[in-house]
Length: 528
Image (tube, rainbow, N blue to C red; front, side, top):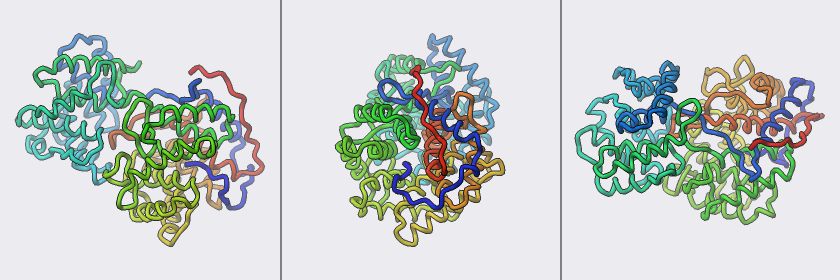
């Protein structure tokens, strides 16, 4: 995702093409992100409340008859504010948790909407998951549907395997097939430690508790697990998807700050933190206390450390690259999680961008990965759904993967089709939406700007920059909609990610503008 120091741009653009307020707006944003860097080098923000986990928690509180009266009241108030949401699954889940009923056609519509927005290889699991969600919320599903959607867990990574075992147990119980087997109960119970949310994932944590709630001997485990979950209740009364995304925020912020010319001392502090939380296998996870590493965090960490100081951080970079190569698929692509799981377009682009930091050393891996990307590109130029609700997320990362290594007609065609789609997708306000015809939002617009910054015509980039300025708050932060997904296709919101991706996009734009009046601000004291 980094801007390349050696990239050959087309002709420079005059600053007069761009909004006069752009330098000041960029400086405010840079100052805001700098002030989010903690003394330990981590860049943290709170994952905001979400209907799904809040509804599951309320259903569990009701079912357990527990004494969490204040927490229950706050959950109810939060869900009451969400029951008229324009997001169908949110409105449906909130109504079900509040005991206000949902009609079967509405639930089926929500189900089909969800399944239509996930990668094909996850479709059966997501269908079973949605049935399990409605079952947990007390909204009866068709018995035939429940019985038909058991999930095979044999080839899943640990998070998906635990979630699938919980889903199977919930659906089996609803279909009258009896309780979970001893091995499944043992696996589910192994994720429960008082005070700790397994892998930081509250959705899986609550699903496990629902699967165990009627299992004899698990009463104390369920009550302790519910108390643990409620420790993460937010000020608005809701619960988040995950406890935090601190490592993901940190790696992207590191790249963005580096591209913006942030003080080296700050960048080295970030790097020291990342080296400290690197896993033994060389990878990184989305947050500091999670065991399962992923291609995304690992790839971006490699880019950041290489951009900052490839000599000092040679060891961590080498271990991280080894971790990436270890999960590479036989099809030449890269999965999100462990070896043997399906390769994905966005993760393959991420891995290419990391491997490309080493020159031609990994040429033999990069070329098959580029062919994998080209094969996955759809007729309109986009790619299958990834980990963002915005199609532009995978587009900009795939574009960067091709932009420096135009090898062969297929790769050049892929790059050109991406650029063409983005140029055609710009809305009248200068921004971009998550999908075709959608209203503009800041984070999708930031993704698009990374591509537009390489084009010959400055006009689209200038209009995009102007739109982003309209979304900036006085403190420098950027207003946007939820974008990241987990589990797919459910969006969750960490507002700082919009700030850092916007700063990264401006880091791609700045080298095109001559003369540049952008200045790096003095570091202000941080409250973190």
